Length: 498
Image (cartoon, rainbow, N blue to C red; front, side, top):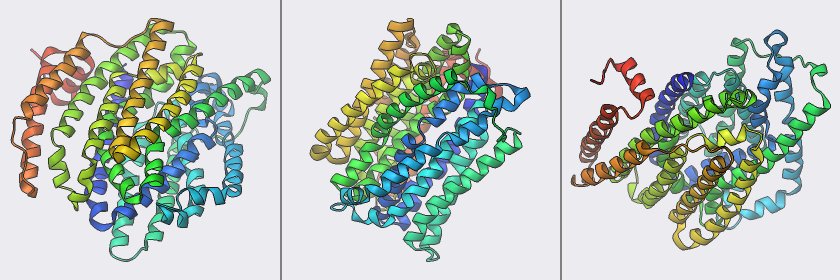
């Protein structure tokens, strides 16, 4: 767990620097200089392309994670694995492009009634999809080298700074809004270039394939795995992106903007999970290859414990300060409609955190089919719940549907791992942490709510956050609930628990 904690902590730190930049962008810069409709259109373009890329890559990034240990051989540059990783998604993108062009009239009709402006940027979707595909592939290859920190810098910091630059150029009149939308594509292209340069510096950018290494049996294994990943990828896209896409279709682009900003605030909770997932994946792949069930169990339990601690801390920090946070946003009266989106999204992300690296364990095992087929079932549930709750409760209904689906999905994965391997991550410490969080929430809510003024809101955030950190962090540290987090804190602060 040591390398996971070190790399995960560094990556999480970078991600939270990115969160600060992203929060500045979404909570102040964008609402200040762009209309809700413009914010919604920019987010919708990204979500559409990201969704298409997730299955047009044909499971390429997961194949990189899964099969790198099979190809691994330093003396032969891993048998040309980088070449195969880059070439593999090409047929998927070509097929996507063909379908995308053939069904253009159908696609344009989807948003014609409530969000027709997105159709003006139809031709940007294909190139952005292509770039996202190779973002997935190149970041996965970085993970196989156990290098997630620098890619996190590019993704979480540099991209957000460049996007902020686009909005500022739009504000001063140097870019039209159409130029901003094209700039979104250019920013991802810059990211691809940076990833390639980083892999070149690592001396792993080798394009010479070893044709003799590819056997019919290996191709069948990759094809079978890729097929299930493709099925699961479609389900995953539905689960993660269908809410904003359905809001755009059923309501309007303004609601997409409100939902996106609130959703972003809620997802801050899960940043540590993303970092731990990225660095855990190649280690779990090797552990399954070596049948090291003890290591897998250790990673499962420790990831759940450490993620729960950080998740509860950040959930408290966000939900206890939610009214003050909205006071800081320009045009707050518009975006305050997303308050309970934050609650339900945050609870869903907290369930994900408490569940540990369950998806990664299943996906890297021989039972990966369960993970992928169950997400298809989850996708159906997500669509049905969104169809039920969006018409009745708007964007809050979409958030509730997402939280419900995520909870059911994690319960299914929990049950599978327990029944199949007798693995389960929960113990008394996690129950204690959640109870502690509830108690501290009750205490903090006794503090009077902030007034609408900026300084009152900032003061309120500082007071509430300080109390949360002291009470929650101090109790967790003092009781020694996590050896890993205590060791990390001792290393970087010089603290010692007596």
